[in-house]
Amino acid sequence: MSTNPCVMPVPQPKVVLHDHLDGGVRPQTVIELAAGLDVELPTTDPVELASWFTITPGMEFGQAWQRFYVAIAVMQSSDALRRIAREAVEDLAADGVVYAELRFAPLNHLSGGLDPDDVLDAVVGGLVEGEAATGCVARAIVCGLREEDPERSLAAARLAVDWVGRNVVGFDLAGNEFDFGVEAHRAAFEVARNGGLGITVHAGEMAGVDSIAAALEHVAPDRIGHGMHLIADCDVEDGRVTGLGPVARAIVAEDLMLEVCVTSNDCLGTPMSQHPVRLFHDAGIAVSVNPDDRAITTTTVEREYLLWRQLHGFTNEEFRSINLRALEAAFVDEGTKANLRPVIAAGWK
Ligand SMILES: [Zn+2]
Image 1 (cartoon, helix red, strand yellow):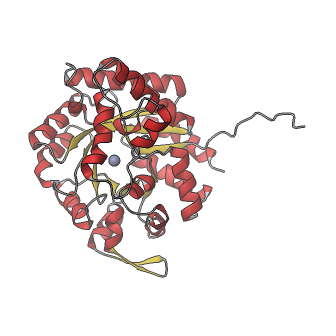
Image 2 (image 1 turned 90 degrees about the horizontal axis):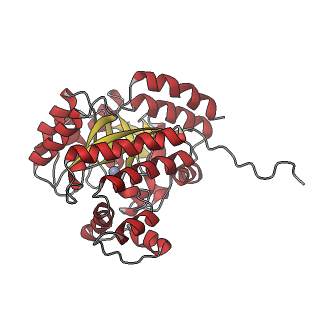
Image 3 (image 1 turned 30 degrees about the horizontal axis):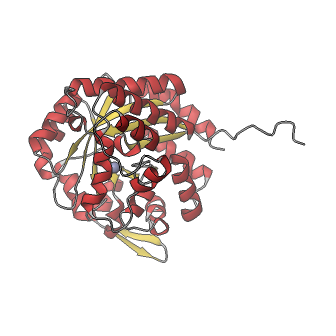
């Protein structure tokens, strides 16, 4: 009989750069919050709701977005936002995450009567509570949305800049990449950058390499959300990249990290075993491991690591360098990075 049968392995220290607050709400929390609101759910069984949340390949865009609308519908009060932010940090910390950037579009949370500062106050408050309870350092990224009036993304960027120094560290553009270009939102990115925020942008997730090129041209991002379709700008022979096109060369030259989300990309139709993350990594393109939408794609951070290991052969040594590099690409202050660097370096053996 073992003398110590109940000790759980300590998860290795991880950095998460791409995780949507609305895409990661616990199904049980959605059910509890919806009960007090006029929000209709397809089911009040947490297991069935978790299953309903999952976007599947081929699902129509509108159907997929309906999942987000349900989550957003219960995120319209300070208490709900604070709770959901705190729970997100708790869930990430349980998977060993020591630093996380949680993103969301604050202007989607005003229908219950909150003003934009109330929304930030509640979310940042929840992140601080989660950090205090778990030790996982958590920061916020404010999103604009491609399909919305550029004036609205500009307002989101101005709001985010007002919160610089109060745990808001970045600005992102999410939403419908198929139909809406990044160019219209240049002013928002300019305000965000000049205001001291880190810049990331969803590109090469739904649309092709031209969308990544447009992001580089119009936004000058520090990181790219997804970037999966960058593979179309790479020559691939015998399972390795043998040449880079102009966009891929620019990504390498500027050392722009791709915030890779394997399960999420599978939901949009790229089977996870065919994800180009191994090709990218071996070609010197910086990649990081991210869950994107934990609830809406039914994944966890640990599961993403498992997929990278099992399907793409990543080792602890590679994860160590990937996480150290992700920390350098984080939008947090240098003092926090200095504290976390040795934790990550020591935690991957
Ligand atoms: Zn995303």
